[in-house]
Length: 253
Image 1 (tube, rainbow, N blue to C red):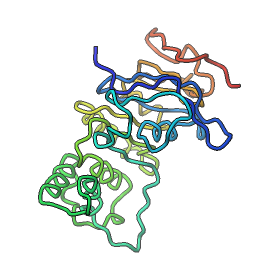
Image 2 (image 1 turned 90 degrees about the vertical axis):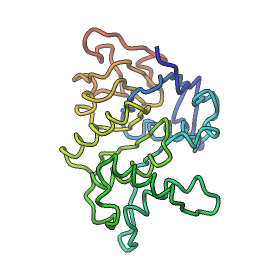
Image 3 (image 1 turned 135 degrees about the vertical axis):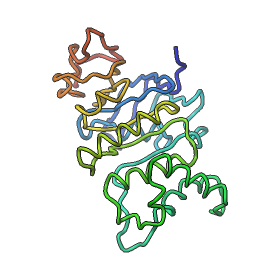
Image 4 (image 1 turned 90 degrees about the horizontal axis):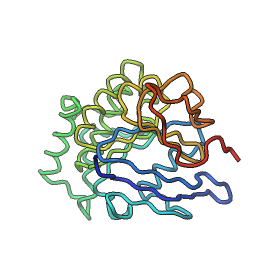
């Protein structure tokens, strides 16, 4: 059995006086491809930011590879949502990808090794030929690949993607998930998405997030998954495989 790479215990988080996540416990194995799904405002992005160490929990613990998130940031890649580039700013694809290497340099110096890492990341995403193109001249799917390349330049063990297909057409979504499935051979992948029908062909597990979290150690999404994060019914998982109830189901109090 694969070792857990992320462990969350009894996690609570609130913005001001509004509770966003409550009593969340979660254990993720190395090289899982897990989808966080659920309603808008349910806490999916907040949970990712807690796992990244961007936010700190009110209560509870988070361990990434056995350590607090702040000590493992260099081993994690992150592709946030809404990465809008100023159209009046002529930044190239290579410039964007090289930003992923700045964490290794106190004064922002770019080395030959950084450029090699950036080119290798672009090549792995079939985007090397676009390295001198202005980022805004690319399609939505191509831009998303560039942002993933930026995250990959540090060769992370874990890759988080928040709504990576929000501005991509149907074929682009399929291509992107196929790419992520290939990356999953060597990396643990977390993706926040509403593409439930597409996701079921690629992910290995699913977490329903709506204040609390219900983890399903299986990937097939049935019609009942449309209720995802709201009620999370027992019939959710296909093939007769029961799901693990992390906290009380159906409690929306």
